[in-house]
Length: 419
Image 1 (tube, rainbow, N blue to C red):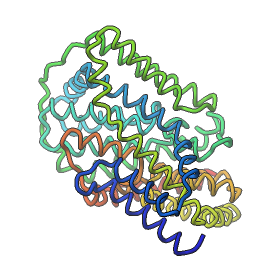
Image 2 (cartoon, rainbow, N blue to C red; image 1 turned 60 degrees about the horizontal axis):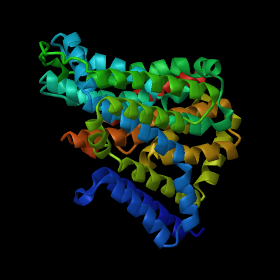
Image 3 (cartoon, helix red, strand yellow; image 1 turned 135 degrees about the vertical axis):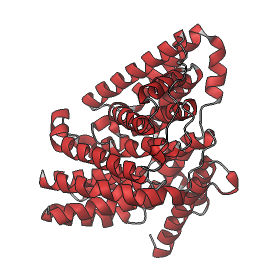
Image 4 (cartoon, rainbow, N blue to C red; image 1 turned 30 degrees about the vertical axis):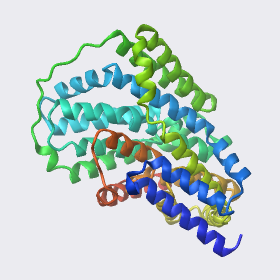
């Protein structure tokens, strides 16, 4: 491919990512992702069959997101979120700091056992409900906790981030091997992110909040939805242990929960399906098309050379460098495309286990730098916008520029020293 064509592809990718984030003319994120993909095809920079193949590559991701969005909407409609939110507010006993720590701790568990995207889709609406119930004047620290822990805890387990399965592919270590390699770095990432985020939000977290809020009773539909969430988490864990795709189990669990809940209350079906943010799916499909185009620019060959050189040295400085570089690339191009590109580069560069781990940390933890960093953060932004909250790219970047380096440097150092 000529250098001019490569430049055009990278330019379109950058503009598309900016469109998804900024939403010019208030057009939805999906419009800009699909428009960027269409422009690549119409300009001849990417063949239509290659674009269709790229869309098909994302089937497992679409199924996973569809299942999670169905469950999240059911939890909202049945009042499960309101119930959980009221319990959290009561447990906080009037302290915004305590509520923040509760959100962060619960977010760690959701991310670890249900994935970072689940934290963005399922936990964020519950936290929004909690801040409303407690009449929190400064809700952003609690909402930021959802976004940052979604990435910080996303390599606790293989299922904690779908990118983990993409990065390792057929070389996925057994669960015991995964924990031996990533348990300590994960702990460092979670604790360092908490410390940095708490320090930056300490003024806002000094406020007193309401604690005497009524706890709405759980309906039969809410209980069934809660059961569906638990069973979905178990299905994900089993699928991960077996090395299976996560999309089908998640989608099947979501649809089964929908049918069971709506069998007891039929008027929920229509509103639940209508109010799901289905636009997320074409947005993700557009990102897969961008990946296919970027692969033609030679970026995989270039990354493979860097990875191969890092694998031969396998030094502390080399691992810190490759992890940081991948983190920055992920923030420019989103970690979903970056993860797919990195996976191909790891295979082509015959990466060592240590280098693969450093790349994984860069892909998973690095996105805490910017709002474009991960799909989970984009889903988080979508949830906030739906509720009337706006967080600008600059606002997130100013916070991420403190929190992300404070976590990724010690995490990569621990990973390197434990290799």
